[in-house]
Length: 468
Image (cartoon, rainbow, N blue to C red; front, side, top):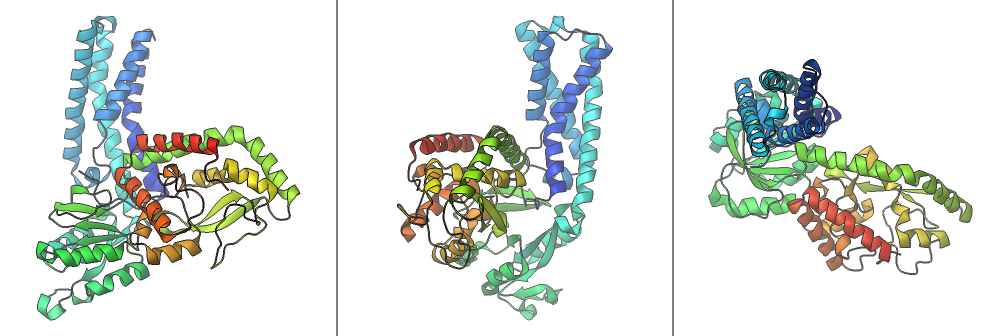
């Protein structure tokens, strides 16, 4: 099951997602520590081990399986029941572990029983509070994603009505598209019909549409396939209602939204706790690198300024998450600072590269300032490499699916780079290969894949492969 209709990544939503990810294990452990103090139980190695087991089990069992949406759409009773049932499972596992290791007698029974009875009430209260806070945040129009419906029929109209009457969906309905006119459709709200299928792509680009629900019968399979191909020049999320068929999907999977079955055809992999874990990893690792590297970076900046005229940092416009323009930082390595409509790629023995710039490019030290982009949230440590705006605009016209790579934040390194796609792209085929790896990354992302890419990147940098 995939998380249906990912929320817009505003700061309040991100903070509440983080709170949801960490609150259950922290509260369960905190209650155990308080009970230990109240009953004057020694803080022994056995107790420390119990504390760690409780945190791990809480993190695994008490997290929602599909992110925040089911918490909001489902009723309070459903949320309370889920936590209560999983708490019983957690206690049963602890009893089995205690029996298997013959260690249960080492803990105060009054402490354990008190903790087992009082903790679920605290967990349920916290979950209900987070649920209500998120509902309030998503009621803000600034948090809403704009959605359109392809096909005007009972299913699409019903889903649109449910979206409009449920503020927790964090969606606003921007209209319907159908090749049939209002007279043939018998549309109750003809003003919401914005055009035919041929008008969708232009409307998506002009009106900032975030989500598309495709509600066309399977007999229109070829038209849906054509629409998907045309939408590959955008970063819009696409869901099909209600049947599965063989499309080339990005983070595809079945799910349910407001009681309607959905199939994700194109969505970001970073929803719910996955987005939180990705962001936390970026913050921790980027900070861990920046702190010891800061003095060295100051020396590099000074060397760049002293050895050639111009600023120490090179700033260039590139496309980030959802195709939004961002500014990417690097140490300046050239005598020019191109950021216009035409940008020449760096080549081997490029006469524009300064002497110190050549060393920085060979060792990839010129990329260090992009750690600041990571802390800002504009980039990630791992993801599709961002290209200059001029190159983006050129390649999006030549390569189908090029813009889909912007469903995630760009990275300092990526799957394409560890497969030899570094440096100059001398042909369209080479860029197509890069995009193929970028889309494979979106389809197959996992924390382990990120770690593998980072490890391979260190080996490549050490060898200086294709770095000029």
